Length: 165
Length: 182
Image (cartoon, rainbow over the protein chains, first blue to last red):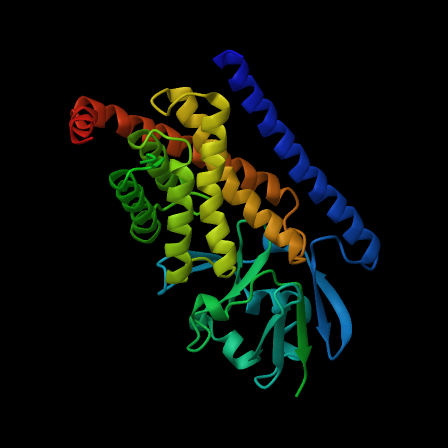
């Protein structure tokens, strides 16, 4: 086989890999759409208040929110996205959130969760926010002491729960 | 006595390239916020390493060694195993392409293709880990396509940067010096 054919073969392999990745993603989205409630688009993140489903957080809503960013002290990477405070205010309004209200953000695949009070989330300097990861899932990050290192952040977020005091 | 596939000198060189991958990951920053942008530096180092030690398996050794270093340094967001395999697959992906193309990275097209496939090795590892661990599907539709293209483009740019570095090294007489050392 000459070099030209080998290069063409490499191109074909690249297309096949892309096809497999997109095909699997498409099947996963279809599966997620079947399993999720009708008002929850695939990939969206459900918000529960005191155990009851209130809304699901979708990418289109992000365009309404101001962008936020900070440089993490650990690796010097810029974490940019949208404040959790803005997301919650968009769906729940300020009247439903008191300083003692507990907000739990969790990831079932990573078996991690973090509970924060509304007072902590509402303070913009704490930068409790969602960063969009490379594979398109959301990661909860912050500069809040004790929740400012990568190990403690919540990757692949798939649920937000609010518990009233 | 049976001659070893890699000489001690070559293994030391490959280990130094592995350390350089880690240094690049930690110290070199680009203002770009696109996923996989650090691949510009990684792939350039792998491309140079694969030419300095022109043997099949050289890239894999760089990948595996840098994976071990990265895991111990706690790099990455998804745990040590994910980090190790991501780095290792960069090397393995590069080696597979070098084996398929039967050429070295002094050829610009080969360098770019190796850069793309090596870097996609990292993307595929992270993607497969996501599936295995049951990570939620992407929040943004077509986010995966965007990430795939981003990894491929930065891998290609890394290949180009590596090829330019090799040209500069050749012009500076590095390979003639290395031949004398061997």
